[in-house]
Image (cartoon, rainbow, N blue to C red; front, side):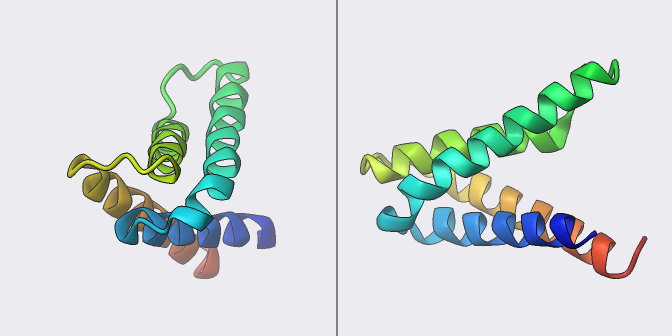
Length: 99
């Protein structure tokens, strides 16, 4: 349960990083978030579930963070930033209140 809360906080930090285009942090977080999403998707594939939205959001966020670290920007990044921020808040609240 503590690990899920920490991973949710990582999503919240990633969302803030995307929204404010923090370049020095984006490069490091890109790898972590991208591989977190890949691990999530592979684990769901092993369970026989072929669509895993949380993992897809993480992979897209990892790619967006990598693009931000290379000084490439787009307006769609704001949508991705809000999406990962809301995902992090959703998972954090569900973990804290044990819903």
